[in-house]
Amino acid sequence: MGKRLINQKRGRGHPRYVTPSHRFFDPAKYKQITQTQIGQITDFVDDPAHSPILAEITFSDNTKQYLIAAEGLALGDKIEVGAQAKPMLGSVMPLGRIPDGTIVFNVELKPGDGGKIARTTGAGALISSHDEETNYVSVTLASKAKKILDPNCFATIGVACGGGRLEKPFMKAGHKFYYMRARNKLYPIVRGSAMNAYDHPHGGKSMGKPTTRSRNTPPGGNVGHMGARRTGRKSRTTEDVKK
Image (cartoon, rainbow, N blue to C red; front, top):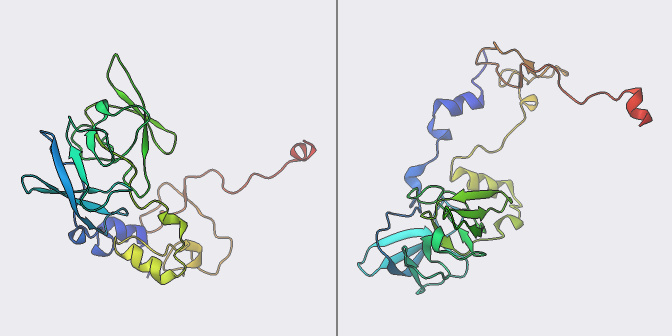
């Protein structure tokens, strides 16, 4: 009798494969901004849910908000949050009031969604241009893709802190294990052909087992190339060799 595949266990919703949101500190989203406020950075928090550090911002009315910290901020620095904020490092303001050529991060895709793109360590997007007729803002991402966004979408000026995090290797599998375990990420990922036959349809010592599967394959075996006409590299013909 075989066992359930890993992707079947993950789809079932077992706690082993569900993100442990109860251990996370804060979603680090923009709250509803009604007026411009000046806040002071009073602390930095290392949240397991985010790769960059979160900055604790305390406002004049003693309310606190946690946002992704910009590279270069320090304790005691003051930042402005709101539509009338000044364009300086760490300020949170709408895209329509940010000058062209400014680097921003934690950009909203729609006004009020709290920030969706450029949120990882070292991430940043470039304000390319402002359309004078429609007032929409063109934002260039790190992947060179361009987004046309509403001018009322908020963003933070600067670059997300923690850049260069991927330059240092883990060196030990144990370090990677605990890093992935903090978010219940699947690690390590093992090839199906390296498993036993009762663990995976591709497992076992029988070499040359096909990876193609019919579209009507039951849930216990629907892995591999579903409904594929062919697999592997194309064979070279004599005409290709002459070229």
